[in-house]
Structure formats: C-alpha cells, structure tokens
Length: 99
Ligand code: HEC
Image 1 (spheres, rainbow, N blue to C red):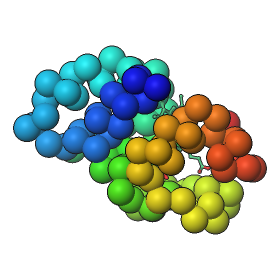
Image 2: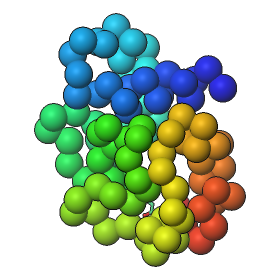
Image 3: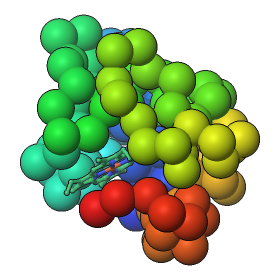
Image 4: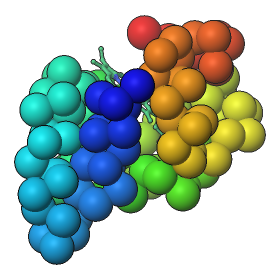
C-alpha cells in the first residue's frame, strides 16, 4: 500500500520542483511504469499515456492519446483511492481494458 502512495506523490507533483525529495523516493517505484509511461515537462505519450497531474484528473483525459473505449467510458476520476485500487488490478477496475 505504501508503495502506491509514493507513486501517487510522483504523479501528483511530477512537474513541481518544490517536492523534489518526495518525488525522488517515488521515482524508484515509478521505474516499473516507465516502460510504458512518461512524466515531467518533456513527457510524451508512448505505449501508455503521459501521467502528469494524474491525481484529480478524469480517466482517459490526456490530449493526444488514443485510449481504449473501456477506459474512456469508465467514468473514473483519479484520486488516491481510485488510483490505488486500479493499480492493484487494472482489469478488475476497468473491465475490458487492454494490457
Ligand atoms: C506494459 C505497459 C504498461 C505498464 C508497465 C504500465 N502501464 Fe499504465 N497504462 C498502459 C496503457 C496501454 C494504458 C492505457 C489503457 C487504456 O487506454 O485503456 C495505461 C493507463 C494507465 C492509467 C490511466 C491514465 C489516464 O490518463 O486515465 C494510469 C493511471 C496508469 N496507466 C498507471 C500506471 C502505473 C502507476 C504504472 C506502474 C506501476 C503503470 N501504469 C504501468 C500501459 C502500461
């Protein structure tokens, strides 16, 4: 559970240098997401969408990424609880999503 909290910290402050220390601990955990996701000022959509400012934004709302219908119609808004739940088992949270 703690590790999800760290990831949340990275995702919510990725573009803010003020929380650099928190971000550094989250960064290690985020390494396992980097294969498919980027964060930060120069982030681009790759296999998965950019995750900047994730906490507080609606699911499937990053410009220019072609989301699955499943995620687009999920009606989720990412807060810490939703995100922690999702990352434990994405397919249980959003039935029909790929990957
Ligand atoms: C194998 C590639 C892969 C890995 C590794 C991966 N993801 Fe993803 N992720 C995706 C794809 C593809 C989507 C888009 C799914 C869709 O459109 O249904 C996605 C979507 C997401 C979303 C929803 C984004 C939005 O804009 O609504 C979140 C949040 C997310 N991933 C978090 C993570 C985190 C955190 C990790 C690391 C613990 C991670 N992912 C690891 C491929 C990956």
